[in-house]
Image (spheres, rainbow, N blue to C red):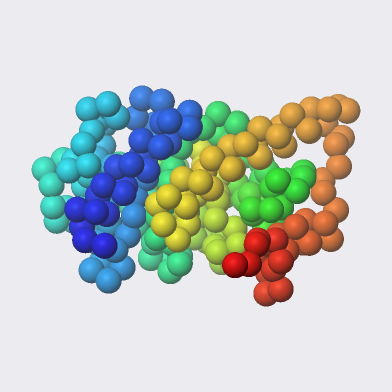
Length: 232
Ligand SMILES: [Zn+2]
């Protein structure tokens, strides 16, 4: 895929977040990486979606230097770059302030595996990472948020868990492509909503899904002996 095609793909994915109701105003961004050429394509900062064109997408190197285009990249670029450097399978990243996932992020709580919808897509609770220190916020804020996410993922596989909550902020998701990253944001929002609704029933005492059931649901789709999908 050439650079123009990648820019169009990233542009379409940014608009898809709006179509899915996960983003209003400029509250989100999608990026993609071309690992062969060491380039990242990301939404430019602070432009209303209805004014964007595919050609407006910012292209940077892995150090964040603008290599193509006249518009500056999203302020969240450094978060994306940290994740790309540490998650070699990530081909695209999406960030939103979607209501239900953000509610969990603002509560500072991991989203527990309440049901099979969650277990079908994400292996384990969605981690909410630690809050940043004053120093980490005041100096190199975005890069530090990326580092804090990576720090939490030292003990988590970023392939089977492709979502994270930034505390007091909102979700980031990734996938092998920007389309997959957006799909994971859509699924995350829905299961965050279900989890909150379930937790509210019976005074917050709803049980989490038994671990053996969560294991079964994830592994039948993605494990070495997966049988969930039709084979043709
Ligand atoms: Zn944000």
